Amino acid sequence: MSKSKEAVVEAGKLILNRYQRRDFGIEYKSDGSPATKADKEAEEKIRKVILGAFPTNSFTGEEFDPVNGSDAFRWYCDPIDGTWCIINGEKTASTSLALSENGRTVLAVVYNPFTNELFTGADGIQTTLNDEDIPRFNRNVPTEAVYNFQISAKRKSDVLELYDLWGQNAIAKLISRGGSIAYNLAQVAEGSHSVYIAASTKPSDEWDVAGGIYLVKSVGGEVTQMDKGRILIASTNSEIHQKTLDLLAQTNFGKRD
Image (tube, rainbow, N blue to C red; front, side, top):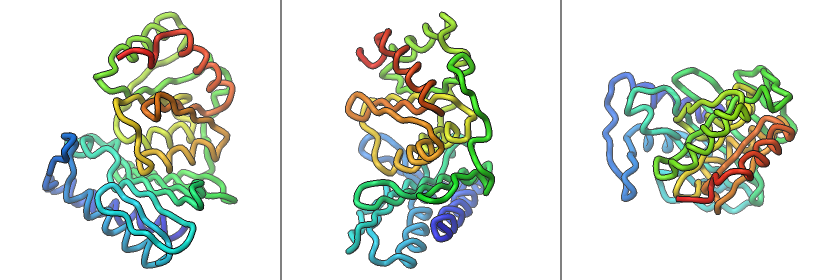
């Protein structure tokens, strides 16, 4: 765990430096999403620290070709999950790092360098935020649930379905935080949000979600992926999760567009 924490914190320093100088060096990928010098520098730093400590492990990151090692362990890294956020001056991006063993996630680190929130969890280790045990908040009944959603503009009908549920008082509070998927999942693990719903037009990549999903599950939360990975629903506990799935099943959420 110590090397993974070291890697993401060092990457966070590089990201903050670029952010403070407003020197991003923005490029655009074929799908129109941005990549910056900060993305590449952060992934290079993480890769160097991790593979320097564990040279037989594999490493898959968003910015560079994967490195295939000789053992059962593979790291998944999103150096900046939420690149648009830092370009726009928001502070909801994060660095996400997860370790899998034979395809099963066994460790996760999610770090927001702008708020200095470091979420960590691993098999056999208590999940924490800045070394304090989480969840910090427990909402045990669905009527107290805070729903946070992040839905593509191309799926606007799904947004309307959520607002209809809120208008019917089926959802207590509905917000849209935006930013990093991993960071939003980590906040479900913390208990800040009871439910997080993400919906896009394409499936999430492993580096986007592996760390955040692990954190949610490590504290007793539940995660469901639907529509071939295009929809992700995470909840802080099984009662709220099942209530959410039941509510959405009564609507056209995910069935149009």
